[in-house]
Length: 247
Image 1 (cartoon, rainbow, N blue to C red):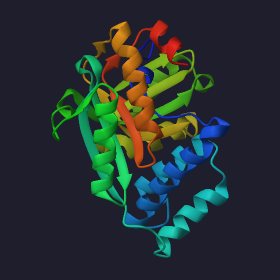
Image 2 (cartoon, one colour; image 1 turned 90 degrees about the vertical axis):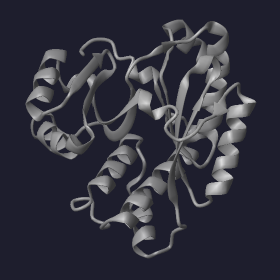
Image 3 (spheres, rainbow, N blue to C red; image 1 turned 45 degrees about the vertical axis):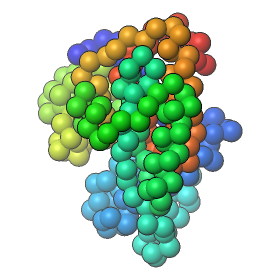
Image 4 (tube, rainbow, N blue to C red; image 1 turned 180 degrees about the vertical axis):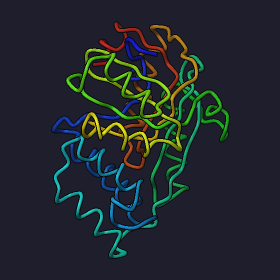
């Protein structure tokens, strides 16, 4: 579907403001280290590592930081990080998926559960929310990469499933298993993407009342500020006014 992108209202991750940069880089480094540990430390031979490095570069993470994170895994100087997914409900019954990378499952579970309960939500069982989402590959290009029609044509030829474009850029979605092939096809014609990722995209969006929006924003911020949390997704359909008030 072309047109205004609502996905930016759903996937939440702190930008690279100065006061947040250190925390963001820490999350990106852990992702790189885990990817390098699970496969070869060479991004050319490790698709997941290549994605992690691309995401770090998109946030202007220094090259030295990236290389240090890879060497940490190659040298065995890393904690035993585990990927964990938590699912729950925010104010108004909004579905929330929280992706965590932690070296202590019990601590992570307690922290996430506490944040839900303190911010108008409740943690659910695995599968209680994820069935409302699709696991997809996501490729983002800046607006200057091409017109909406040109990007749409390139995405179709590359085998992508969907494209959303707005004044900020183009977001291309692919089947989970097709992500790397689509990236290679797109880069041949459009150049390197701004970012690439594997995401949870809601099948449908749920409107949020004004009262619930304020509390939901607090929940998202609290989760995103937690060190172990890598990414937060919801199926909330915020209005422009609600997003503006979030700041």
